[in-house]
Amino acid sequence: MNSAMRGVARQGRFDGKVAMVTGAGSGMGAAVARQLVGEGARAVVLADVNAEGVKGVAEELAVGHAVVLDVSEADAVDSAVAEVVRQFGRLDIVVHAAGVDDPEAKQLIADALVEGRQPEVTDRLGNESWRRIMRINLDGTFHVLRAAVRAMRPVGAGAIVVVGSSSVFDTPVGYPHYAASKAGVHAMSQAVAKEVIASGIRVNVVAPGPTETGMAARTPAALRSGFADPRVRPYATPEEIADIALFLSSEAAANLVGAVLLANGGRFTG
Image 1 (cartoon, helix red, strand yellow):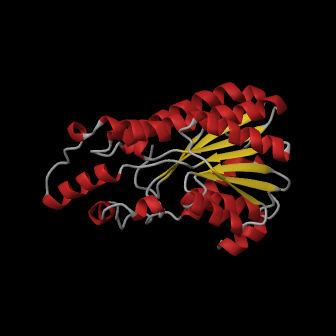
Image 2 (cartoon, one colour):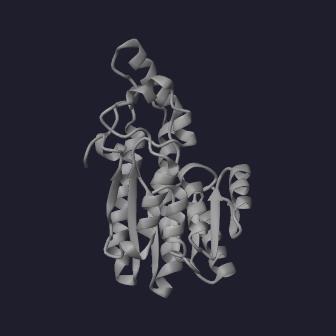
Image 3 (cartoon, rainbow, N blue to C red):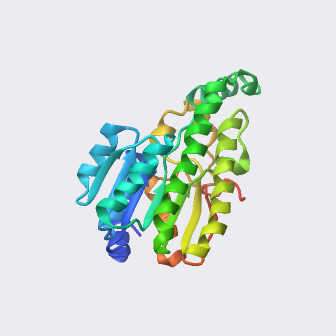
């Protein structure tokens, strides 16, 4: 089913809903925001640290509202979510797609591939590289989960979808900090899911493999070629991952709680 047909088939799935999407200035987050609007959402708040990017995407959308937000800043996340509730009266859906990778570590891995040797990364990782990944990927996810639960628990309903990573399962050589951050994201999301389902809130995770995003575009060519495998699907599109996130956000996924949906095109199974 092409995107036009899919939009017709699912039109109105999110009628009247108020949603917030982090990392919405590009890639998967932007694709999620566009699809939410296309499927009837009353308001979609797009949050991203990239002011120009998120404002540009929001301007495309009739009911899009841009917020410049660094998810690693707890008070800023709390304020942004509280403002959504104040302005629109509710918060039904949160899709947390904000996250970062480590271009320097990727380059070290790629150099090793080109030179035919094993990557040597761990002993070269600085404290700030470790903290940056953890601060944004792991701490940021906690900040968003906590703020979303605070908004949703009083009304006894809501759906939260977190973008994790298939790297949790294959733990790429030379990428320990990224794999660890996303493993923490998965575990935390599942723990929160088991707690808050009693309050009518569903939390689930989509764990993409290689996906054509801005992050992927910055991946060195040697590393990208390492993901090429004729036996499996190529890089996913942001829209394909967004489809999964929206399914998890919808009533069709009412029986999914704490699920981690591995979306890596068949490269391996979890």
